[in-house]
Length: 448
Image 1: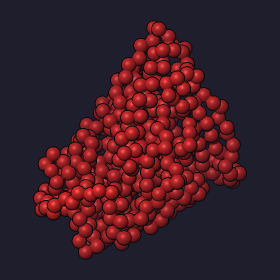
Image 2 (image 1 turned 180 degrees about the vertical axis):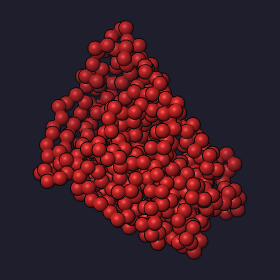
Image 3 (image 1 turned 45 degrees about the horizontal axis):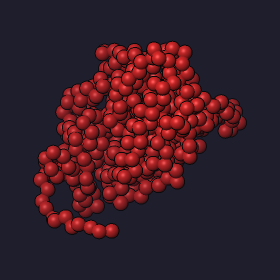
Image 4 (image 1 turned 120 degrees about the vertical axis):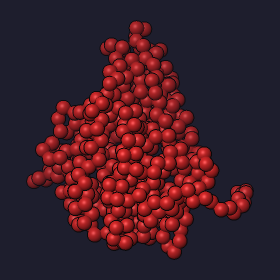
């Protein structure tokens, strides 16, 4: 492979802080805010033009239940619940009818809400800014190199959170990762106007029947309402298969193919739908909805049995009740696995679902699962903590904990852990988890 040697150069130090969060999804913003509330100076780096990650740039407008599967116990609080309450003031969230339902967000309002959270807590924002490389001194992270309109710069901090999704910072530090044999395929989300004008026309059945004519698989998808926009639906109807979203070339192809598939669905509806129907593309996600790439090895790897049997941990920092949700990598279909021992497999759009048991009934089924702090702590770097979907989990466990109401909590835990490390002069691996849990609870998180 041919190479070009880049000349050595001095990089200006543009900012110094107690904590630098790399990645400004809700996970990253929540890490920054929780640390700032505990007195840290914080910087947050985000490559997009807004904070929120998949919830905003990806247009994924669903936050799942904050309760256990019985609906009787609230298991998630913290900034997830706080942001929902803030959005309610602007009628920017659809609240479920019961405790087991999901919240639907106006993701455009969420962008502004996250801006306000960052500004209220005097977090230093870096938008349109790409993380480029780490700077290591004496075995610890000293700074990160970034690129933006002001060219190449450095940000120095005492502690760092990797909230990049793909574990980019951790990978550049040489930390071991778990590469997957197969990856759950990504989806391009779209906001579509006028699906309600189609009357009784069964457009999913039409996609199933006529899809090959438009280069579409008999795929499985979902959609829902958007607060304040009754004539527009959020749709996530197609997958892009055989794609690794952590590879630049594959990601480029997938972005283009995902948009093509959205148009193909709409062209199919225009051709075979009722003539009085009027549909229009209102918005396309600014970023492909990547579900799975690499995961970074940490002090503990969460397993499917840990999740599905509701194993409890003395260092638990997050609780969840969302089902195991595995999007098939070898073609259309999805497998749902539930805490009550049942499983539902859907092979493609419109096909009958197969319901079966993955285990025999228990005397008492678990109603939630937990994520231990150890799954966010790599063993080799003293001032780095993970947050988000690159946490250490096997395939089954990951397929439950990857949703936003769960990863939001990992961000809050990472921010609080960084604050405790700065306050007590400790490395991340030395954090007293009882103190971590107590501090999280004092800030509104639910610790069980």
